[in-house]
Image 1 (cartoon, rainbow, N blue to C red):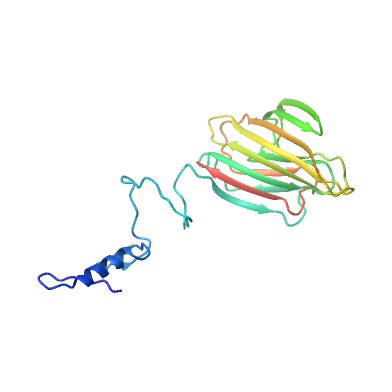
Image 2 (cartoon, one colour):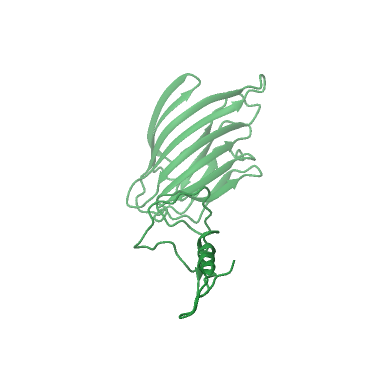
Length: 243
């Protein structure tokens, strides 16, 4: 249907007026401008910084560009290891802009009990402290230290050494300078029992870390295996940030 422009002091057909309403409101809501209400893109807004809509209800929200809100986690990146490695570095960060980091780790080691250690901005000085509760098999333990040189991001604590283990960890980091930076970690360690073929959960840990450095901006996250070349193929790290 066409859009009709009415001229002053001329007769109009009611059907033309109806068609104009259909043109604007019966089909997809597209941005339109100019006298003929031609479709346009990238030039019109819904609401403004002063006048806002309250709620948006939709089935799928497709966004091109950034969501300018501090309430959403934004995916910074996904790294999947395709060949055995000793370290992974995520750079280009700014902990004073993205004040919170959320990390998911699927850690696949190779053959040895190892840990995946995290260094904030590559700092390996004895500036990390922690409190940890662990359950391995049926044994519960708690430990603490005030002079660690890294954050234990994910453990591989094995009973058997015949197969690679699959270990999962979730980390929340508060990164803003002016404070001692903190990290909360929840991790599960497992491996596949090759004798029975049954999955086996070996250990889980809950830990809190503090980095005593209050002035250096976090610009990178460096992950290193405690045993060389134990970051196996299929290891995945996902990093989200929030302002």
